[in-house]
Length: 100
Image 1 (cartoon, rainbow, N blue to C red):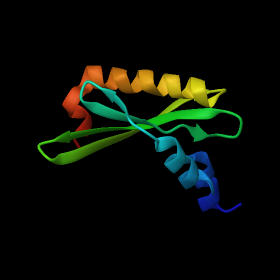
Image 2: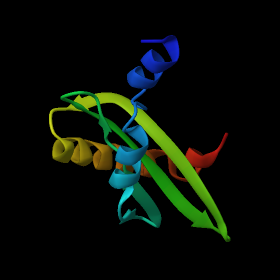
Image 3: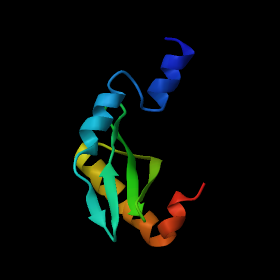
Image 4: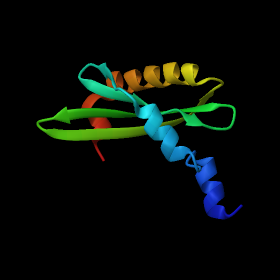
């Protein structure tokens, strides 16, 4: 296994990473004017917490991708944790989520 493959695997972007990401995007969950997309990463028996928060302001779509170190033994539990973390981020950071 080369260094690139190892890094992709560690970061959750293996061969099925794109398929998993596209599949998990699904319908957004609306929360306080934001859209939350759940994007659990398959980590070989565990699922990594991560997602996308999106909001359209004055015709401009802004996105914030987040990846956490948290892991869960099932996709459903991972989705619950991801949703909770996304809501907490929106509540505490609001529009500043999108600042560089």
